[in-house]
Length: 156
Image 1 (cartoon, rainbow, N blue to C red):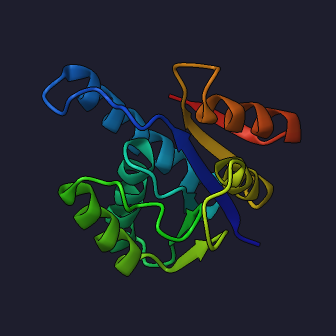
Image 2 (cartoon, rainbow, N blue to C red):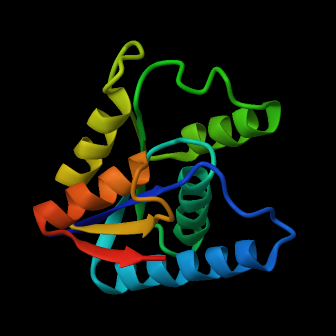
């Protein structure tokens, strides 16, 4: 039976020229390797700007070496990417086209759509890789949901 891993993290990341960004990407790569070593072949990413896209792209790179890996983008609502910058729109489109599955969890925005998306991922996974710097955030809520459900967590 395959195991599944999901990601949560903030939209705002250190600038790419900052050593903290390099440290984050290296830690993320190690965490994905650990998830694979634990038997995870399914990966769920939320499709948001920032950590979600970074994690999804890291999984896509791994798929070149390990074709058995699967990436699901869990999109909170149809059109959630409308406010993305042009470069983030391009990244999102590439991820959507190369993902094994794209789940759009609502036809429209609702105040709870992001929480519902995060809960969906936690309920369908065995492991959470989290980049959480503020407990009072969507990522902090997802981390708390995962801990309450008893998921293993790799905190970056």
